[in-house]
Image (cartoon, rainbow, N blue to C red; front, top):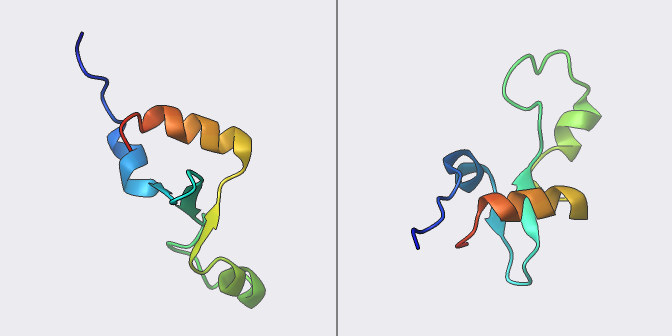
Length: 65
């Protein structure tokens, strides 16, 4: 049986924590930042844990991670 392929876009964007949760980065932080409020930019620093429904999709794209 051939191996499953990992989605290369997903492996660049998501990491799994030690407990198996999916960690991702916040959106809308690459350009046009002058339009965004200071509060939004501050709260979007770092990473966050994906919701269960989104994590299920991301895990399906990362079969060997």
